[in-house]
Amino acid sequence: MPRMQDRLRKSAARLALGALLLAAGNAAAQVSDDVVRIGVLNDQTGPLSGYSGPGSAIAARMAVEDFGGSVLGKPIEVIVADHRNLPDVAVNTAREWFDAKGVDVISDLTSSTIALAVQGIGREKGKVILHVGGGTDRLYGADCSPTGFLWVYDTYSFARGLGLALTGGPSGTWFYIASDTAFAKSMEAQLTPVIEAAGGKVLGAVKHPVGTADFSSFLLQAQASRAKNIALLNTGDDTANAIKQAAEFGLAQSGQSLAGTVIYIQTIHALGLPAAQGLNFVTTFYWDRTDATRAFAKRFAERNGGRMPSQVQAGMYSSTLAYLRAVKAAGTDEGKAVAAKIRELPVDDFFAEGARVRADGRLMNDLFLATVKTPAESKGPWDYYKITTRLKASEVIRPLEAGGCPYVQK
Image 1: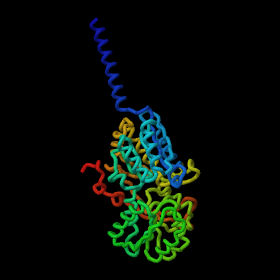
Image 2 (image 1 turned 30 degrees about the vertical axis):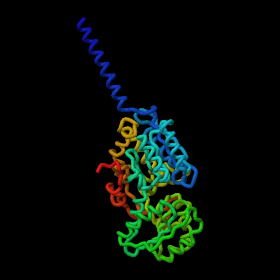
Image 3 (image 1 turned 90 degrees about the horizontal axis):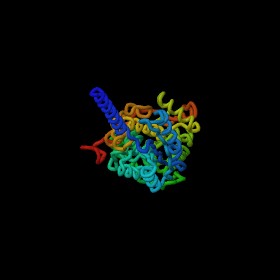
Image 4 (image 1 turned 180 degrees about the vertical axis):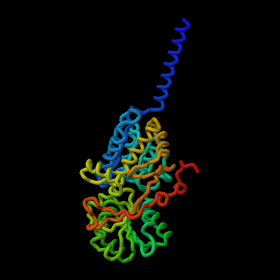
């Protein structure tokens, strides 16, 4: 009888230990609603959809598939919504996703105004926000969040990269053609000190309304300034119209160069090389840069009607994969735990080689100065860029101590 009681006690102990281990495993691998949901929130049909839109959702789903389709034994789901470039629509969608739809992370957020609004919701609810299409440097500065991450570009790094790369000697003079927007004001405020510190000079500037169709008077002023670099501090259709009309005015033939602030390969494709040739700009990604970028671009284009990925769409893949790796490492989809792992784990992929995420949520990825090829230099469709300079993240992204992020320990 004592032997029987002994065996019973040992059996009970084993069962209890098993239950404890199971409970510990469940506690360590908690997934809300038994699904990890990724929300892609962007402009699906409007003016920003070409370089973001459905292509961003394609890139996110590619990352999910490459990760294996599940994490911590639970399925991964990608849902998509169109914010229609309206902040109130974006805010309402984000709240509904977090409160009622079980969404764990929201990504893309094309438009800085929308990105800032959704950043606040993520901060309030402890949810991860991946900023891929929004580029205001406030996202990793005064408006940073413990669960917010800026993955691709920002106004500070693009302005600094452009100014450093193009200022010096005879290339040191500038003239701005700027939209009458907060974006342009921010770019001007950040670009001018870089130019002046490098020994250059801004000879003048002119502002135009958003949606300008005729840039002739602005281009004439730029020509008359004789500045070496004409910086286009605008976006979207305004940039495209300015580039096209600059070619008609023969700016390049007069020895002046156009410099774009936020350029996407889709814009160059729509304009054509005869109009866009010689344009200088900073980018975070070009599909034909390495074997790894080419491999991703080929797979992406097969799903995207033959169209190559923009830097935003490539960044969507990278940020989604980094998020899923962090969920796996954290053993949960709880926002703050995942955010801590995103900062802890290295990011080493075709988009950001050997990069890391800083304490303020900024991915420290290198940038590249690019020039649009001439028609004679291009070997075929989408062969549009010459990468001339690699700009180190540590030299062009705003220093951590200068950003004013309140969550960074001094």
